Length: 179
Image (cartoon, rainbow, N blue to C red; front, top):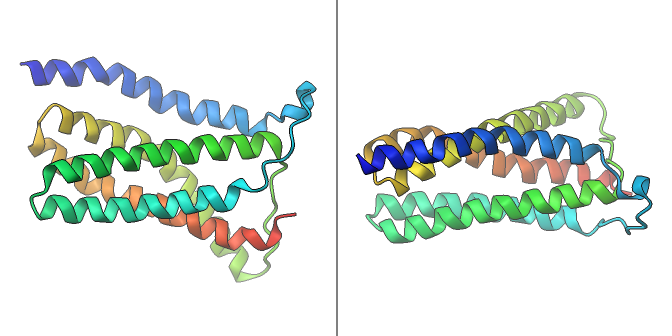
């Protein structure tokens, strides 16, 4: 009974966070500190750092799956918590960069342009969809409902991995066009 109440306790928070994060990011993406009189230097050093953070997240996710397959539950738990922390760190850096810098336009032409936008659009859509999935998966583990945790984790993992890897790919594809 307590496990059900733990999931119920977090369900409204998961819904709120899953809606709030994309909305706040979308709003802040369009906010430039200079428009509010803040003379903030562009944080142009951040893109390679947050791309690296995405890459580390992907590695942590893979190692976490290997850990659980080898019965190392505590290590898996620590790695998954680290993956969430890395994703939050990415998000903070990403928003900070975009609040101080103009967006970079992709300069590629031809087929590569379509490839870039396909990867970018799927990355963005899935990065929004993954928020509630990660939170639900995590809460089910906290609730020790490992049967339902495992079922959703099998869906959450590849999507989260895709988002992390395509974050790096998007950075590598657009990095030649940073000013």
